[in-house]
Image 1: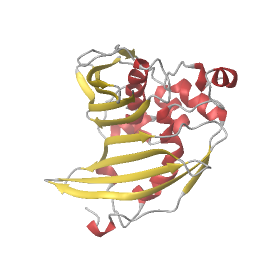
Image 2 (image 1 turned 180 degrees about the vertical axis):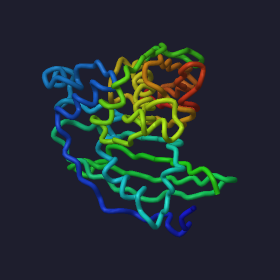
Image 3 (image 1 turned 30 degrees about the vertical axis):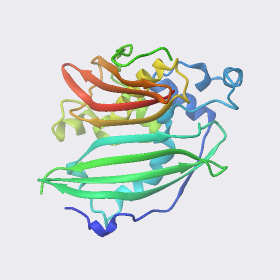
Length: 146
Length: 129
């Protein structure tokens, strides 16, 4: 059942994530990254980076803790048995490094009904410890059925 | 970047092994049982455990970053649509074509296909110029 349109703009408690080097290495290994700047501090320094660098899609790891409570909000009312992850977008700004603290705030960006499907779109905005934006995500979930 | 409008990007071919969704679950924190429990997956009508869409998106990101020599600062934006479902133990092919290339940046249309199904469609990547 579709949530209330008045929920659009509702934002949730910010979520803080400390970026660990081993977590970057684990993630980078699983998705098949090979650039040593994701694994080795010396290689990262040699390439001009201040520490091991997170791959762009590591945004999933530091922002999920902010987005999950929005998706689980009973007021939004997504029926998870009927939900598919329909689309995803990220826009990246500053790089994320091992040792950073990333704070992500999620909000309801849009809820719309098209035919028998309801589209729930959540936004996440992530900033680093200097207050600089690192990534902005748009998470689209599609609920099938009436 | 020496790349022009209409150029294909190098294909990325990956065959995730049967335990990849378990490792991705650990790396990402997404332990939805449709990705890690074959019995649960079958109960909800899936052929087997399925890949995380965001894993497939990470492959699309890699294929586009390769155009910039793997420089993680090059990828400025990536949007994707997930369709169908990705399965372990079958090859995924990521293909792309340069839509625009200028000093301001490069825009690449990308998709990921598995077994004749486009599991990621209408993906658009923007790389820094």
